[in-house]
Length: 407
Image 1 (cartoon, rainbow, N blue to C red):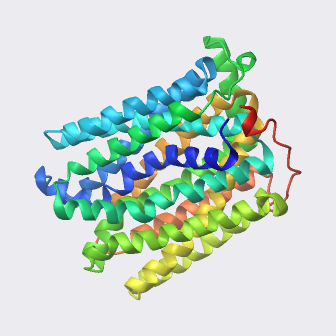
Image 2: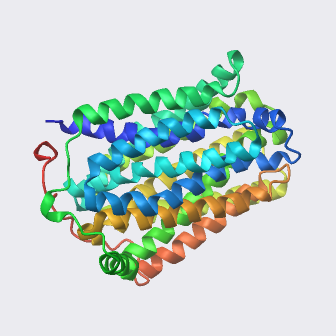
């Protein structure tokens, strides 16, 4: 039987396969653009957008299938396809082919959304938020080291070697999952995949005010991070002329996210998800508004960018750790379809909005700051809709439904 600590680390490792496919690639964007003779350097962001678009679309499938056939089989199948897609991305002969395989790579990675359903199978309420926060802490170790690891590989090997690293890591996660993770969806809860059943479940997910509005809030917050990740290499290169510093500064910001997630895991059961996430969202808005003023006035410096971005990402971490749990809470009866729809909306929508913000990169940090502020304000509107105009109103936590060792 898998224990609680190993369970958290394993789920985090599954999620980390997504992170490494994004963050390890960041130093390679300009190299790939030059290798394939891409005229517009901003198009290098499409490497991220293609992956995230596939990630969003794939989530429409994996969660639904996991409700019918179980979580374990779907996770293993998705991880196997992920390994193959990673290696084929590295073999791409053109920029178009690379984008196609990155889309498939992301679609395969969408199977990892089933890990949210696994958590929901076992926990609910504030304890679910705690587990999600703990997995987020471990998961964030990857953004801390992945860009530096990618830069190290590029200093010795061609950019295609990064995809070998991604495939090898994912293969190890597949083996660990196959050996240790048992099925968490009990047979009596498996759903029949009829059109009527899927439509009914979809109406439940999209018809619940809290589920839908917190999913939309998650979407716009996610868009701000996608814009940051897509532009960060260009910002350090074109704005500050310190491209070599990007991996270390990116890691510093990721540490702030991890620290915030750890704090959330320690206090969420005592303070509640709403009090923490709503406060974090307001701090996110305040910080990004300050960033807009500094960027627009021409006072932006490397240290101001890193400091403000670290605070922004800490606020993001505290908000979305709980937004995701609150979006899932009302739909435990259809956790697989719920995770699929929420994942599709937040990931695909966030990737598109983030890419739209990234298009406006003009050699300054102002487009990122403005885009992030807009995302924060939109998130606040969705939260107010979810809570009927009232912030910080906590609801009593629910006990978890079954212990992890019983899976």
